[in-house]
Length: 237
Image 1 (cartoon, rainbow, N blue to C red):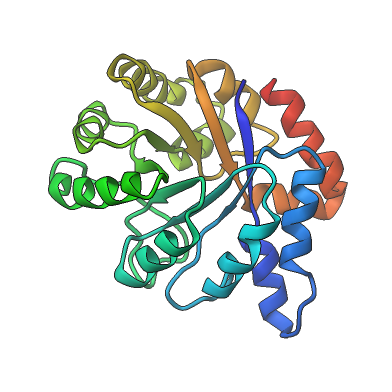
Image 2 (image 1 turned 180 degrees about the horizontal axis):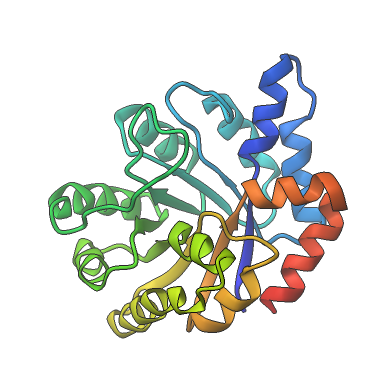
């Protein structure tokens, strides 16, 4: 059973565009869980252009499912994570000026750095996941850091799927098989949508969780969030 975690960053983007508190980020977190999502994801960035650090603190008490906080493990991010103690932290190598996540970790080059952070997360009872490209070497490198899970970076799959190239799933399937062999849990995210999620899910053995934000919020503008979340759950199960 693949869990759906809804990334509510875009709700915060709309709020910040006008100031005030509309739409209400906390209410969005409550609602996505009420509508059936099995988790809430946020990805605060240093400039707080969408989710703010304070949002992360405010959201924690209203989580009844799982709370996943993504981000680059800079000092301020880690301080927040260790204070909040979410269900899961997903380590993403964002540059400060990145519009969105655009690459996975080099888990070989950054093995020592990641291992140290993951050890500290485990001491705080926080499940860890590393954002990685669909490359076998990076999966094997991730396993050596001690992480609990990987999150497959799915932008390339999504881009190729739109073009009709279903063979683009193959690197992801192969990486999932290797991750399973190594005892790693598998998450996935980035540009997954109602159009491609069912095919992706069917081809990734033991996919535990998908984190979906941009597409889900855009689809909700036309179809309504409750209906859209219901459709994702049907396609995932």
